[in-house]
Length: 64
Length: 333
Image 1 (cartoon, chains in turn blue, red):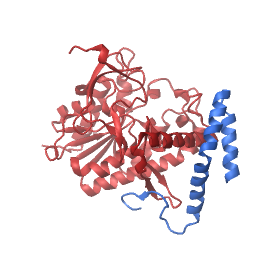
Image 2 (tube, helix red, strand yellow; image 1 turned 45 degrees about the vertical axis):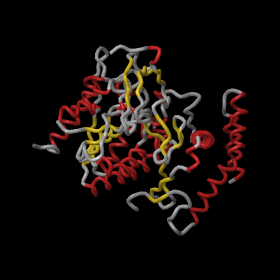
Image 3 (tube, helix red, strand yellow; image 1 turned 180 degrees about the vertical axis):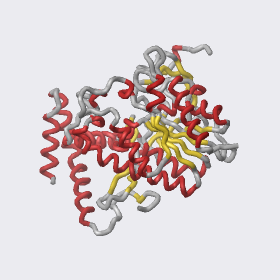
Image 4 (cartoon, helix red, strand yellow; image 1 turned 30 degrees about the vertical axis):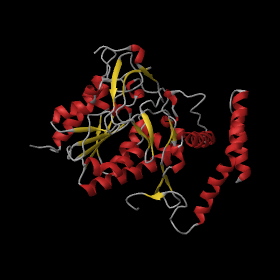
């Protein structure tokens, strides 16, 4: 998961047209990488949970 | 009315001059804000804009004095970009059906925020009818968590397909926190789009917006699923409270022009899918496509160049809503 996200970040940066944008997006990606990895892990864990209660967020009216 | 051009505010797409932080919705109108405004790229005419005591571009509201009114919600079309307040469809509608109409439209408001307004503010406004104006292209807003400098709450589907609401962190009250979170949300969204082969930043062309592209339809399936759940929530709430619900869908800018040369690019796609969702949820809908496109000419258009309804467009919008409500005898005397 972690490696996949880092690969995505690098590909995303390289896809920018200007060199300055490439560097900016690489910097942003590395800065946000821990949060991206965290939210990915949350999604993976919640898939394993038997309960339908999410780790974050509220149920919305009405309860479906 | 004479206008002091030196005090005229020029608004461009994304300007949030009339908006402030709101802990529930992300942003809402600044109460008592009043300026002469020039809507850059829309019209050269200066428009006077005034927000009421509730931060809405509407007459002042007093709780309890306007019970049973028609509550209109929507984005910048309802708020009235480029038109004077008295020329909006809400004001026309009020005259046509002789019932009070409240305007809670706001620029860049998403259908998800409309849902939250209804759930949280219906008790304050106590409407008999809720009209939701929707520019079909704008349903993509349910995927945006950061807009015009404000973070927003958002809905998502959990692993069971249940609709969940991610409320905003209390830290978002601080602009610097909003900016940092916003930067993350923006990056995350762009990364997701990049992985789906979508680029809305460097090479965006409104005529090939991915929301119209059949080969990108899968990417937006999740968005339509969320919209489906959101309208079901709105419908159920209104039914429980005895409030009549009506959607008004106006054509998007691209639908006034020629059809796309490629059968894989369908400007009707968001409207078609949204209508299917509304039909599935048995929600009354007025499709403005036919009447507005029929009345649109080069000499007397119904929209500005950017797709916002002009005065003529607002008139037609109100007329069609009024016709529907008359036919349904919602206010039969």
